[in-house]
Length: 323
Image (cartoon, rainbow, N blue to C red; front, top):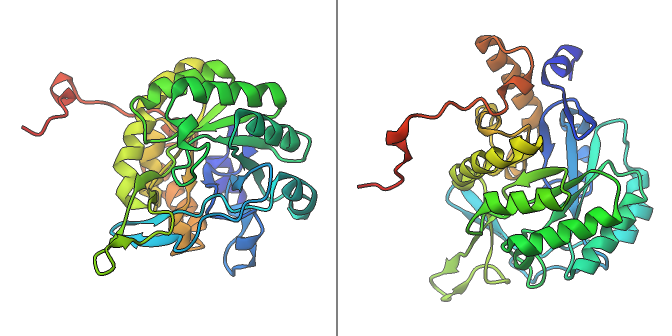
């Protein structure tokens, strides 16, 4: 990425310098090494990489099938397969080039105590920040049990905050009644930033076998199909977050620069790219160029000017019914 683009797209996110607001979301870029082997991809093209979800002990994940393509998206039920936090800290992090981009750990646990211990392990490492996954819809323990209950979400965040000094980002679930209230509770518990949304719970069924396609029976839906849900969630949470000066990583169905721009307008400071990587590994460099072209056309000096610039319609638009 050339210096002109960095000057226009660079942001400060929780004290971290991002060369661009584009962030690779957890679960779609492995542990920061895998995509660097693909021609045309560079970690320097993104502001940060969120590492794959990591638990205290190694996990084998869910039985196959784990991925299922759907109209305008895909279902996944990986089940947080990972080698365990100590292996990541001791074996994987030393191999990463921290001059390329920022790296954010994504942590999960079956209990609040496990979350705190994983946070402590990553806090004593070169990692730049810690994202708390309290919203995974395809594991039996932890995950949505914590993420769909604002009080439980707050307890997890508070425990991690007590265990770590690095910036903490709470990753919120769309599979709950009031995501804005959950955000408020997480902020009060000590979250420095928020990321949303995680995948939407869903299922695919094989009509011939009359069985679920996924070995876990259900999984998390990602891709363009969830973008309207994600945009609405970011807008709602921004109303809470902006009063506390809490930045948001908006994600869910982003496949092009225009999608990213919409999330920024809704209130995100950075945007997460995930499922789109599976069909175009060089999408981030393309999006950065297109972002700058949009800014030139609109007379926008820095991408930060877009955050929260949404102008709502009047009272007549507040009815959500179709009648």
